[in-house]
Figure (cartoon, rainbow, N blue to C red):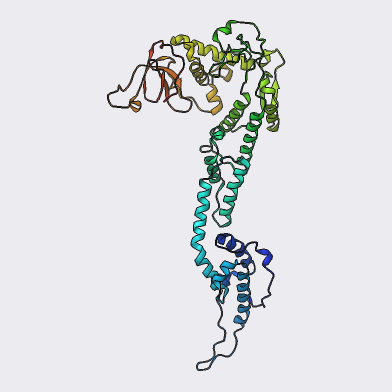
Length: 467
């Protein structure tokens, strides 16, 4: 305890709030550092007790000498008492009426509001954990979450960035599922800070908004020798051997080699696909995309796409008009995928109805096959530095028998039936098995394959979603 005389100071500007029944934690958080800096906190927490008023005399004599320590302590205590009272609202001030020391006031307030403060902490945590974006833009949603986290930090319960990001991800709207999935926040090896997450999320929202508000057209000169009526929404558009300006909604038109001179337009969602690919590739490989090569089509040159590339420092290389050989890598890879898929369909005696499944499986296999271009490494091994697992690879279109017990509604149904293998699930570690009698696709990890047998399916108009 200091032996120098106490000098009163104007502390009112240091405290911005008055204590009421809702803000005890904030009040304590503001008051405590001020009291510590002035060496006054010991008076209220009990570590600096009030000295005796008088110095003890010898036995039998009444003490008359005033204790110098008491003379120094009392003014500080009374000044502190008056200052504490000045920081209380009228309703709280009435509850401390009649108390004569700052320690009594501090203790009473703590006993009255401490349990409420614990409830406040629990309430703030619940608010943060159950926060939902709703109709808020991302900036407002982030600000609300950060405000709750800051309130918890003020009262000594800070939320680390990983937990805060986890709460934010849980509260984002379904429209951001692609952003969440592509970044794989739950499994990524390096943690993002809140500021980094905020930047990525706001950039994604800005790009999606600019894409949605852009003109709904990417003009393509399509070899679509159809009538000028717009194709129905359910109609599937088909590409030829790889050139992206040769498309049609009618498979028979791929044999026609005349340009399309109609006024209809085909919308290609290249920008949205690129956003998802960028998130996925950069997260998977921990590398930034530095250059984009395209054929200069309208879907790659409209303003929101170009603005995004510039803002992210991505160089856009384009082939000269009518010079597809300058985009030869993409053209050859398209042809590779197409010819592999068609060969698989022919080998399995499957209808062209299943071209999507065949092409997806072709891509799956090409990524895992060694190639001379990569010195007999597979693209999978070259990118991820690990050998692919070939044990799961089966012959496309062969007869298979999936375990159907989990799908059966009662015990008398067969545990399996003859199906056709249609490839691999991109989101599950399992196989896609088509029941040709019902057109139902089963997804299962327990499948027996007869890779030497094939059976052409009964023609069906469409495939059901996997169960």
